[in-house]
Length: 201
Image (cartoon, rainbow, N blue to C red):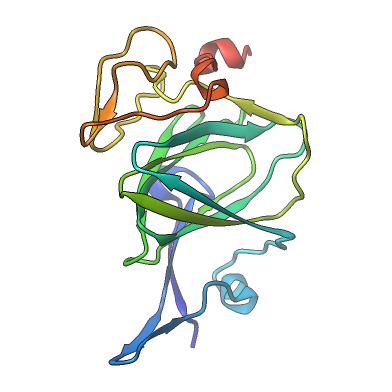
């Protein structure tokens, strides 16, 4: 019997899945399989992962929205400490849900994993004091291949939880807070443009 439950095509977006593992717990603690290729294939998910990354961020940090231009990656993301709001935006030009997003709360308690296919922008907002974030990738990191879009683009309309502030026409973090903590973005992430200015079809 498989150790995962899969909620497929979240928000009607093909290929965007939530992986819910079985947690075996008792008075000593718990055990969970964080990845099992056989279980994934039994759910119709065939991916070979080649790289495993981990990051740490503090409350109010927002990373994204990022995508890979020439070497897109499928990502299987999870949180091992704290909580984040994790977001994927469909950038597949031929997709009926192009420009549509879906977000999931990932926490160390729920142990949910968000499967984000190639062709999506990705980002997350840290909701806890500290968050440690892990993700598997199906292609290696390629320097100088990263692209990005404004995290607050009204054309996408992401509803970031706990975020307070007013859109002023740019991706600047100025004036935004999370639980009274100033929103914290990299300089690069505050310069991205919206989806309509990033992709011209």
